[in-house]
Image (cartoon, rainbow, N blue to C red):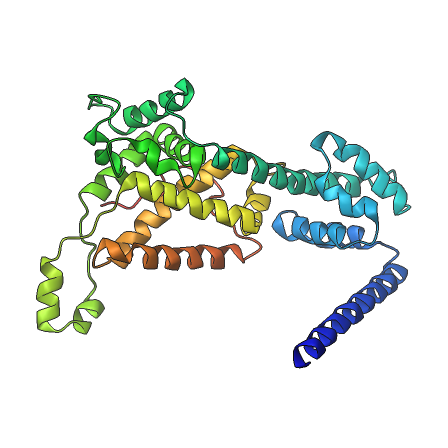
Length: 334
């Protein structure tokens, strides 16, 4: 009974707040002579702040036209904006900037939805060793990461040198499908020097410098142990697939909207997603060294702490994880 009453109160509050919000919108339109879309476009700067407000306004509208506008085909955006202007009785000749602003927002909104579909398609496609294209991508990954070391055979323990778990990498791609391979190859190809450096550091880690404040927290025995400890490395390819999973979940949850709406002037693409993966790889690499874990069993703890830090950054509407992306920039000097 208590549960039923609680649910009933929540439902009543929802409809009450919704009614108040519609009343407020009506009053604001009468006072300003502008609809909510106009107020957002004229009073909010371009970027995530504006696009996310437009997206919420369209999605929560009682008009079917506005609700469906966030999922139209990119080619239909221009016609959709004309229909919205007509519905809202807005003269495009008097308000030309509104159409331009709405178009930019809708391109980002629709583009984000399409990007999710593209990424999901790659994630669902399993690695197929009988597919020549898949095999070619895998061999290119080796070539980009180990340009001076020939791969002796397709099935080889050498794969462990770049962070795979066994002699055949195809089994490691099960969780993320082709998406993991696409991201790793993008990183290794587009920024070979940085990728090779991160790979080298993961195989031959060095302890970070310990500050005087940290030294003061250790007992003599702890300090001696810490001083003799070898820094913990990690499996480059496996971590890359794991960071792919992180990037994927940030995308699906909508957390990356802030980032993409700030860096992509129009529709975010797969290249934007892959650049974000590269950024996350760099940042996780630095974060791993800063955390200085005692052993590899702490990976999940470090990853979760890293995930929370990225999500917190993305809660800032002005945040752009890599506004002027250059994969080599920001790589720590090991």
